[in-house]
Length: 69
Length: 493
Image (cartoon, rainbow over all chains, first blue to last red):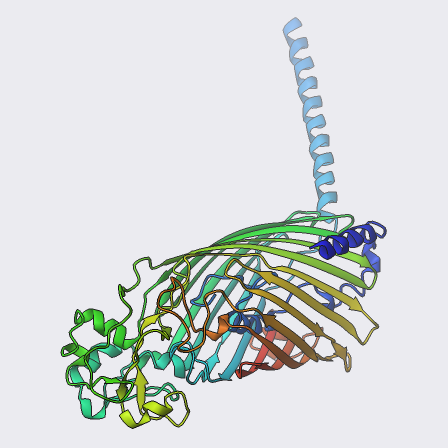
């Protein structure tokens, strides 16, 4: 937990230093840079939700909606 | 005269008022036109249609339906369509509908007693037919092969409608959704809503989403347990009539019974309340990250009533070939099946709190790096770590390759024990290896084709993108799986 707090603190410090303008976001707007799962990955997440006890914190299902966990 | 003067003044005043009004209307009208002329990019330019499908197959030797041993052979086919419709500049409606059609060897062994004609109904209740056709001479089963029972296949169907609205400056987005899903033993209703706020010239995004699932079991039980309740424990009646029950030594016995106090499910509901908090941050021109925290509370029947449990402190009883009892746990066993002591029992609440971190880095115009890590913990004693990396590599302007690797591990739930190792004195128990201690490695490869000009047509649909994925998944418990997926994205003319 201590490490997580330190990492978060560092990220906040770094993130407050820079503002990237819209016209500078060409690379960040690449489809492969999206900060979420792609639609095609949904099935992969589904079978992992069935086969593994851990779920969630990835933008997908975290429980409910099926007889799985 | 004076009256005429007043009329003239009134007429002039009225004329002025009309002129002023006309000027004002013209001004504001022009101003309004000016506003309309400002360019505002639509959230979604055109209707998008995604056709997705996947094929999944697995095999292993620890089926939960047969108490932690037995074949886990399963295949699953999932055609899905997602339609996103721009309702205006700011609003988008998305309909997501799909099915999951699976065949499962372990589920088929809900009724493993594969007697002639007894369990090959389609959608019928296996147990009722077994009662009619019972004959001790040919009643047998095995956890190592699929039964032909109705429960060997099923279809899960779902539909979700999501409505999202973005503010004019695109710095505030809210959404709401409804979902419904059903399979033969389970029905689910879901409702959710969320909000995202962007700050700092869209360099920072904070979001919160809440989702509630109201689910219901239509429980199916292992044949012998369900039948035991039906006949009030009379082993000469119903399913058991004319069937020889054998003890561990192969002798006929009428002593078998489920765990003391055995009962079927009373609370058939399962509610899930999930809150997701996320923070996304651009670090520089080439990198960004996001943090996710889920807080999930579940309550209701959280076990699966199909999954048998065998206790180490209770004698064992079988139906089938007595000579196969000594090799029961071996795949050589083709014709004897052990009667369950109970089905899995788990606490009626579960609190989960996973924490996820995603970091993407744009290396160069050909390559980027996508990473993900998740720490998971819950109050059933499970701690898990997940780490994955994907390196998209642009082969050409239209093709991108996606090699990936994922590592997963988890500790076992407090209530897990392998076949014949649970104790009947415990309150909660399961032999479901999905709740055991294990680690898993997954190796993946993908290929994507993108045509930004959407030159290819199918009817009014213009092809924008094709995605393909393959993953190989291997657990150290022996389970392995292959997964294929393909997705087509079209733009509607």
